[in-house]
Amino acid sequence: MDISRKSKPTASQIIFITLFLLYMIIPIIATYVFSIATRWDRSILPEGYTLQGYRDAMKNPYFLITLKNSLVLSFGSVLVSLLLIVPTVYWVHLKVRLAKPLLDILMILPFGIPGVVLALALVQVYNFAPLNRSPVLLTSAMVVFTMPFMYRSVSNNLEAIDIPTLTEAAQSLGANTIDILVKVIIPNILPGILSGSLLVFATVFAEFTLARLIVGAGFKTFPMLLVEYTRKDGTIAAGLSVISFTIAWIVSLLILWVGGKGMKTSQDVIKAH
Amino acid sequence: MAYLSLTNISKNFENVVAVKDFNLNIEKGQLVSFLGPSGCGKTTTLRMIAGFEIPDTGTIFLDGVDISNIPPNKRDIGMVFQAYALFPNMNVRENIMFGLKMQRRPKDEMIRRAENVLSLIRLENTAKRYPHQLSGGQRQRIALARALAIEPRVLLLDEPLSALDAEVRVVLRGEIRRIQSDLGITTVYVTHDQEEALSISDVVVVMNNGLIEQVGSPQEIYRKPNTRFVATFIGTANEFHGFVSDSSHVQCDEINIYSTRVGKLATGVKVVLLVRPENVEIYDQPPGRDTQNVFEGKIDTITFHGAITRLGINASGKIITADVSISSRAPVTHNQHVWLSFDPEYCQVMAE
Ligand SMILES: Nc1ncnc2c1ncn2[C@@H]1O[C@H](COP(=O)(O)OP(=O)(O)OP(=O)(O)O)[C@@H](O)[C@H]1O
Ligand SMILES: [Mg+2]
Image (cartoon, rainbow over the protein chains, first blue to last red):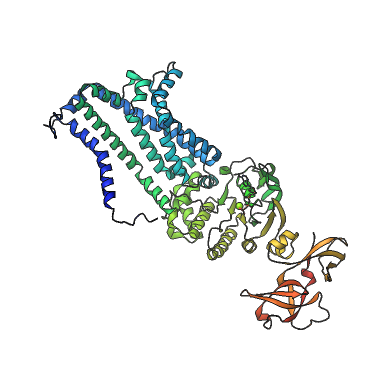
């Protein structure tokens, strides 16, 4: 199929796409505008604009603490997820192909279990020090919760290259397992690793239920602060949402930029297939 | 002791016998090919030499040392794969230097070696390109260069040319042979193409069903096949079924064929007698008295093959295939009455 060939979109296509974009974008724009509005309940457009909401939000001593906690939690989850999933999926692709369907099914489970159930179960099972209500337990839960994202991205990418033969070629040239993973396999599945990392990061950064139920007030995250403000001050809550979006976007750009070079060669590889 | 030696090797997969009681000695600097039909165990044997499969029984010696328990990345054995297996994320030079990097060689030595092997395969100007920017033939040359860069003790090639066009195949196999003998590198070459095996090998190992059928020089394999399988798998042959009538004759239905190759086969043993098409002599008049094994027939089919013409001759109901070179004789015509003879030297006899 020739994707590059352009044909004129029909009127119904244009309407459909426009509606979809509006549906996606309006809430975001509204949040941005609301976060700088003085008052916006008696008129179509806000009555005035101010950055007071942001100033108030940042004055809260918990602002920086929760931001730091959430960043640590999100990056930590991405890291653990990578260390756990990449070698496992590689191994399954290389040696135990029969286990792949099993893993595929296993990886749907986190979608089937509501976060509340997962959280309460974990709290009961790991009801002993030092794990109980610890950020470590929360990170583990987040890793399980977001595992399908990382698994699917990495697995699809591994599918596209001939893992066993590349591995054997590297072995015959004297490479050990670590060399093979770091120098041959990972560079070739970088797009999958990056998109998996992005999905995990964004999900964990915005996750509320698990964090609230597992660690509670002991380790306050950014979404917890946000939820607190929704009950007190809508403008500040909107401001925090905007900050949350912005961080997610910055991190996405950062991850894409870091992986940019590898991404490019990998895309060439895929093009060549 | 031979440089590379496989003794009593066998390998089963679940209930499939892949290789059985395999014994082979390879001398230093030889190019040995494994030839046989699909599924006969060529790749499995090669992979056991490389260390990717562990034999169920037997031992592999390299330079007098048992390497059976050494992992593949410590064996110092280079391998070239059918699917090239170049690393897509590295350019040609990085691919070639990969093995040297694993050995932690100094940078300037790595660059020098990469240049050397690139000039060996005559692709000096591709160093900066990525695998997907090369043709299949070029990729396979790079894969060869990459395997050679580490100066392996043994080079293994598993059907390296089977993904390429016929023309490229012929050129590249000549090149592989040239480089192999220039470097004097001990090489095992797997193929199911008999012409390829015969044209480049010092020794051909013909395999069937996990067993070695015959080991010998290309000439031996072609001229003196030990088994019916070898005789029919390599080249074509006219087959006559019958029994040994005395120490130099085989009775096949009505006709009695004289052969100097009956050997120790006892009288009465059921045998098959094989004559290759190029060993069938054709005459348009009855040949002289001292010519052996003369039969009469009519030319049934004529197929032009370039250097030779292949005739199908109907000799009292049996079709006999004969190759004649046009330059050496008068033209033949359809339905022409001819005489033919088999040289007793080339009448292979083997027990059924
Ligand atoms: N990993 C494996 N698991 C199960 N059976 C295998 C495996 N590898 C090889 N076999 C079987 O062992 C036998 C020999 O296979 P092998 O690959 O060595 O044949 P080959 O001579 O290389 O054939 P081809 O010319 O088709 O490559 C075949 O019957 C094959 O099906
Ligand atoms: Mg094979």
